[in-house]
Amino acid sequence: MSVPHVQRPDLPELMTWEELERLPEEIAAQIELWDGRVVWVRRGPAERQAFMFNLTSALKPCARAAKTEQPERCWRADLATNVFFGRTGKSDFVTPDFVVYRCLETPYQDLRADDVVLAGEVLSPANTQIDIEAKKARYAGGGIPWYWEVTLAREASAIDIVRAYVLETEPGRLPDGVHPLRPANYLMAGEWTSADRDGIEIDFPFAIRIPWPELAF
Image 1: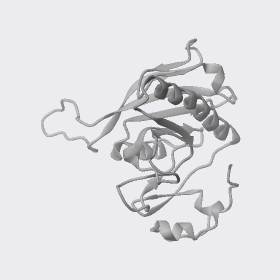
Image 2: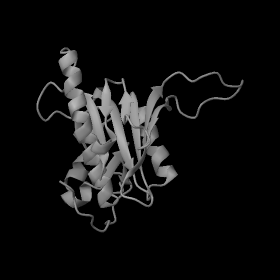
Image 3: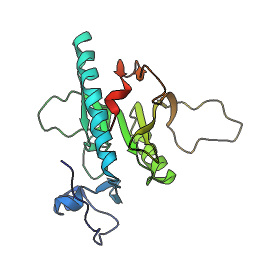
Image 4: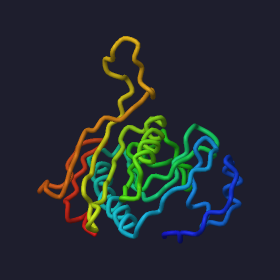
């Protein structure tokens, strides 16, 4: 269920999860905590919510099929679920637009970054490059193996490009004295548009086959 956008109140720069829980739901749902720092999340247009749902719905049968082929492995795909960093505590989290993770052992268990195999974001024209790169760095720093970026068309209610990125934890060869800004980064491993007649096809983290019409608005 979508949460209506409301005017942002004045909040402290830093908060704990416990303090966040005491806020009204319509406010708390617009906030992520990055190491306790309050980060407001853009909700975007109605199309963004629709494509978040379409991607999640398309990933669910792929996850079920993977379990059928390999019963010892169990995956779930869900929509807009909090992912907490670290083994304990809840004051450091992000909320991917869609997420694939290992089946959890108990009901209502917090989802930790270690359990996530794929996190995805649906990007509307309102998203800035700074916002995009900052969020991507959070996922990479949390060790999430796969990251998907879904870019919406500027002049149509449609997906323009879907890109899949794989986590690189060992940087390639660099000139002497040059060091990467972050210890882990993503490399693009797949790219699809509506021109790809077979739709989205990739074998990682399990076999994913999504016909492009399933993603239509």
